Image (cartoon, rainbow, N blue to C red):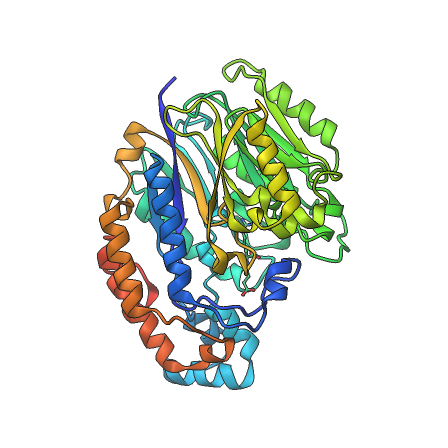
Length: 447
Ligand code: SUG
């Protein structure tokens, strides 16, 4: 067994962060459609959360925003002329497409990829499959650049395998780690990989909202990665109908503990039995602990509204019990708050709750857990990551100053048609490639 740590790679919010209501079935995104956003404030909130986790003793990395507006996407749809002309014409004749091309959605790094740590992978490398995110048009623009970003952060192919996204067909609709949970005795030991899917690609889907993850996508990811201890579970249809567009809206896990809402899975008893069986196999050998919240204590609608389960659940150095890093909104939702207090008061696996303010992201349906991609790394693997992206207080200061001078603090969806925003964004991202040591050809506009 090798010792390993769980690093967090957070998506830095980009300069075009806006509330355009692009994600059906994501209730927060629908509710806040059309409101003014604050890209600068959103970036600062994200950096403060990174600081908190880094101060708590966990390795933290920064994943860069993608180039937005995505002018090449608009060009592929027939808009032509100069970049400014493309933006102007799209804004005038097809504002939905311009909004799509401007989404800052790569900030939600839990959707960047599914990760298999080396302890679980057949070939002993850390595996990543960038999510194709093809259920939502704005998110389907992310996969290729995410692959580039992960190869930049984890360049050593003897240690890391960054695959291409799965084929871009609805059969393989994939939303990454937001629907995956890893349980284990210790991070460096073999674990259980819970893959939660919303629909089977071979059956008809006619829900009120889309089911974004197919079973076939996760089966392919598991095969590619050679991921051991695999358990496949169906998300409850009722949960999807209630606005659970990713399983991480009602479920989070760490070490031996799975913390989830009663309504998360179609067949809860089967999920628990399968996890128990996978956890007891040779090499893993641990007893899972299920912390389930009953509908009577927290109705599903309040779980979705408060985002209690979209907390980060972390094992901190020197602490026997886990810490839940929850969004402020939990403290403001009486029943969710009572559940959180109850966890800490008992003698279960979760010993502490801390709150973070990520309200700008929350208004688009992205809580603390959405903003981070967890990557379990051995010491050697950690040392092989791009040091320029390793978070520390000096980098925080630099990035805050950068966002302070380059980002707007108010943006309405209509402002996305301002060609000056394109110039501002590219100027900002060009500087960022230097700050994070990403190379001089990281973004399409630099090539
Ligand atoms: O895919 N919101 C994102 C939120 C992703 C949250 N991630 C996790 N649960 N892991 C989504 O629905 C809204 C963008 C807009 O409406 O402009 C958006 O894409």
